[in-house]
Image (cartoon, rainbow, N blue to C red; front, side, top):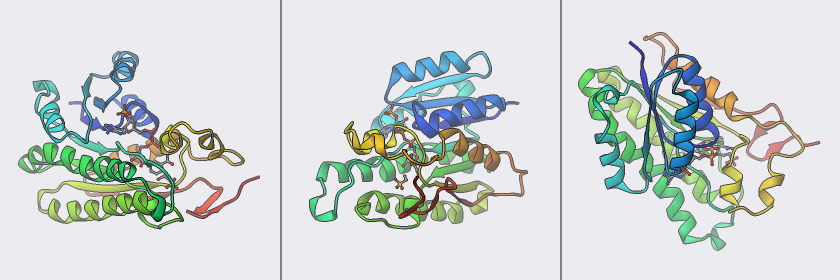
Amino acid sequence: MKKIALITGATSGIGRATAYELAKHNINLILCGRRQERLVAIQKELGSQVKVHTLNFDVRDKKATLEAIASLPEDFKTIDILINNAGNAHGLDPIQDGDLDDWDAMIDINVKGLLYVSKAVIPQMTQRKSGHIINIGSSAGKEVYPKGNVYCGSKHAVLAITEGMRIDLNPFGIKVAAINPGLVETEFSEVRFKGDKKANEVYKGYKALQPEDVAEVIYFAISRPPHVNIADVLVFCTAQANSTTLNKN
Ligand code: NDP
Ligand code: 8X3
C-alpha cells in the first residue's frame, strides 16, 4: 500500500519541491497551505501520479488547523509521514528595532503552528506505533547571526522541540528528524523583506541550495530502512560555510 505524507507549506519552495519528489516515489500526498489556487494547481499536476488531497488553512489558527486535519477523508486519514515545513522569516532587524508583528508571525507560524499540526497528527501515530516526523529547522536553529534574533530563536525552538519529540515518541517506534538547510533559493527572502528589492540580492553571486536539493535530502531520510533514523541533518550550498561566511563572486 502507498504511504501518505502530509506536507505543510506545500505551495512554495521546499514544501512544493518535496511534494514533487515524493510523488516521483509513489507517496500519496496531503498538501497544506493558505494559497488555495496553488494547492489546486499542484494537485492537478501530480494527481495523475499519486492521490492528492489538499487542506487550506493557516497554521496560526489553532481551531482551523485541528479541524482541517480532523476533516481528512477515510482514505487520507492514516498519515505515515508528517513534514512540518510551513514557516518563514519576517524582517531582518536588530532586536532594538524589531517589529512586534514580525515577532508574533515567526513564533506563531514557525513554532506554535508546527506544534498545532503535530498535536493533530501524533495521536494516530502513537496509536499505530509507527510514523515519521520531519521538522524543517534551519542552520539558523544551530547558530545565531546578526539581526536574526527572533527567527533564529524560532528555529532553535524547532530543534529543541524535535529533540523532545524524539525522546517522547521513542517508545512508540516513531522516527523524528530535523532537516536544517542553509540558504535555499525560494520565496523565503521575498517574505522576509516583504517584497523589497533587497530580496533579489540574497541569492546573487553564488549558487544557493535549490528547493529540490532539500527535497532529495528529505526523501533520503524517508526512504531509510525501518531501523535507521536520520535524526539531524545540516545542509549548506558549497559557497556557504556557516551563517556568516559566504563565498560570493
Ligand atoms: P517559502 O516562502 O518559499 O515557503 C513557505 C511555505 O510556508 C509556503 O508554502 C507558505 O504557504 C507556508 N506558510 C507560511 N506561513 C504560513 C501560515 N501562516 N500557514 C500555513 N502555511 C504557511 O519558503 P521556504 O520554502 O524557503 O521555507 C520552508 C521552510 O524552510 C520554512 O520553515 C523555513 O524557515 C525553512 N528554511 C528555509 C531556508 C531558506 O533559505 N529558504 C533555509 C532553512 C530553512 P502559504 O503562503 O500558501 O500559506
Ligand atoms: C533560512 C536560512 O540563513 O536566512 O533559515 O536564516 S537563513
